Image (cartoon, rainbow, N blue to C red; front, side, top):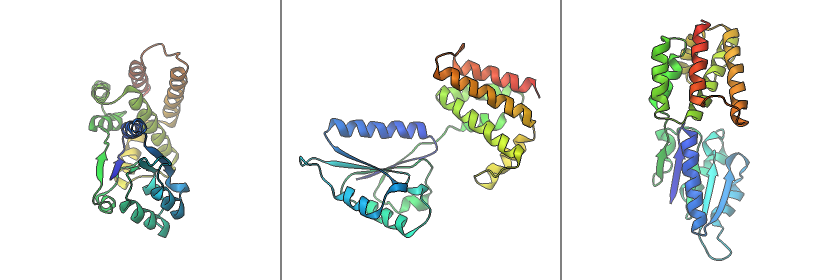
Length: 229
């Protein structure tokens, strides 16, 4: 049985992966954990053919297969995984396309998507009125963990800084165009200041020094960002 966990919501897919690992340990299953970027064809062959010393079951977990560049080795790894006789969990930190998934026709596939409200909120920052942006932020909070919203906020600000610097942004053209348009609503100084404030929040959270809940701190940061515009 092949199980594929993929999608942009890495937090949720990681949680699911841990659930499968915990269940395997409870059943005294032998775990083989492999990183695709360090994996050779011979090592995978050995892992898929291995069994517990006590005759138990084996679960093979492979991470990041589709992050590998196109190559003969990657094709061989995919063929071996698709035809494996032992249970395999394939974890990917990205959403796989239908073409990619067709290579594993018998797999159980679970996709972990980010909420639309989260993306809408991030796209609104600086471009829509503050009340509208905050309302969408709280809608995102109702669907996502506050720390995940925090991480995605940091990511968005970093992308906007890249755009202001004229640095190359990795992603589809429509996403690059959106980031570039959004960055035009800020000065680089504003973005660097908010990034510094986010870094301070991150440190405060890790040292249990937050004055307010993280979600409220993000409210205040957005108000501050708009007040500087």
